[in-house]
Image (tube, rainbow, N blue to C red; front, side, top):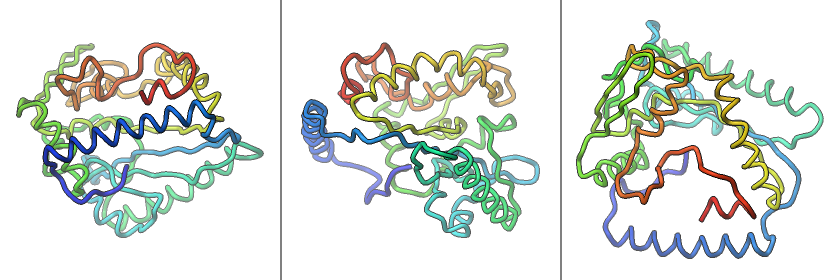
Length: 271
């Protein structure tokens, strides 16, 4: 989940420099889209799976440092919390027995993860939101000890003026939870599929994925529980949207699921 950075906090000049570079890079991206400079090669597939490390009572076990050191595989990397890790695959061209090959690769990697976890008296589990997760599990002490995560937490808290992040979800039950850190996001793990398409067609695939998302979530929603409450059929949606909410974003959510469709190119998303 990203590369490590050198500092966990930034000065005003850093934000000014970032804004300048972002403007410049957006202009470069616009020109590249207009000139057809992005790849038009065929289709390839990838995925990532965010998994949980649990003790034998199936509560979160914050041992991802030891786990990652023991497995020593670039395809297995840290996640936001100390009790999550991320598994990745090598991207594969969509041809022949691509799906069989990818499931074999994942099965082999998962077996190694289980072996390493058991050596640490731990279980590795794939699940959307752990049904027995407790509010106290999502605390700053369980943030993975990497500067990029501390920077994310520091800036979200700073931009909120120190105000708590408030999650309010009404479903079968109702839940209100307040946190002074971003750890709520750690409860929203998932299996994410990555599809590479020819650049000139990418916006059509984005539109198709937006159209398909509603029925797909309706068919596959499987994370109703949070902190002992039965909420939405898929509680990760409101939790993910609210977990790092920032004020003053001109109506653009830091985490959202898109709005409308793209007309000409994928550049509209970048802009």
